[in-house]
Structure formats: C-alpha cells, structure tokens
Amino acid sequence: MSTTTRLVNLEDVPVLTELVTANREFLAPWEPIRDEGYFTVEGQHALIHAAIERHEEGTTVPHVILDAGRVVGRINLSNIVRGPFQSCSLGYWVGSADNRRGVATAAVRGIARVAFEDLGLHRIEAGTLLHNVASQRVLERNGFVRFGVAPKYLNIAGEWQDHAMHQLLTPSPSRHGQDSDVAAGGVGVGEGE
Image (cartoon, rainbow, N blue to C red; front, side, top):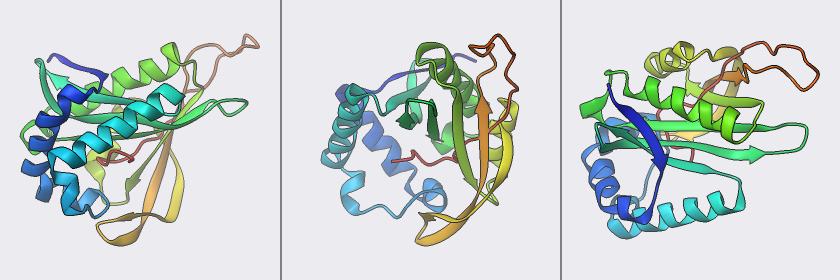
C-alpha cells in the first residue's frame, strides 16, 4: 500500500468537493449535520482556506490522505496547544471506496510521526462514537489507548453523543531522560472541523 498524507491546498478543493458529495450518506452518521453549502466548491474552498490560515497560526495541521497518489480523505491535527500541555486532537475520514483497506491506519501512523517528530508534541487525543468500532481499531493499531468516556461530547448526526476517548503519548524519551509510556487516543472518521 502506498498511503501518505500531505498538507491540503486550494488545488485539492475540486476533488474534495467530489469526495464529500459522493460520500455524503456514508459519512453522515459520523459527522455533524452539514448544511448544503458544505457540499459545494465554494463551501470546500472556504473550509480549506480557513484550515490553511489556522495552519499558518500554528493551531492546525490539515492534511489530505493519498493512496497511490489519489486524494481519498482528510486527516487533521487540530486544537494544537503548546506550553506544558503539548497536545492536539486528531480527526480523519476516508471515502467509502477506500474504507477497510488499511488506508486510515496508515494515515494515522503518518500523522502521528508529524505530531511527535516534526511538531514535538507530547500527546494526541481522539474520540470516537462508542459504536464506531472500526475507528477504534484504527487507533488501537497505532498504539492509542482508551482512557475514558466523554458524555455527550460532540453533536454528531444531530445528537449530542458520548465518545470513547483515546490518547497516544510520544514514544521518545522525555526531556528528563526517562522513557515515556505509550498511551492512546483518537477521533473517529470526522474531520474535527
């Protein structure tokens, strides 16, 4: 498999518009209710433009997921907090045609390297709907550990829903020369936007 990720750019807008439109029903149970504008070129352009601005501010790392060079989804590190926390949130989605092929697992592995090696973060947090077993497996395969349940955490598919919370801690030695334990976390298929 040749799954990679890279920063999203405005040239990705047409293909992302096609993907979100083609996968509207597939993604609906896992995401907030989207208005009609979300599924237009203008809506995706505004979304990507805002993500690029947040990236320039250092609060988000918005990537597309590529498989064999094709854009097949999105993956983001968002809510990046520095200082003593050094943490972020993870969100991702993959279109139905590329679902259950290991694409999300590989993308999460790659973005975790970005978080820990490039950004120097200590922790990635992710939440999945309690019944989103597929996303939970993606996280577990990448070393994420479930640490609790957040009641009515996000409004998904029109309802405030409970989420299983996961985290992944940096596997590299701490600044004090002690090894960190690997723990886990993750967000389901939603983008976190």
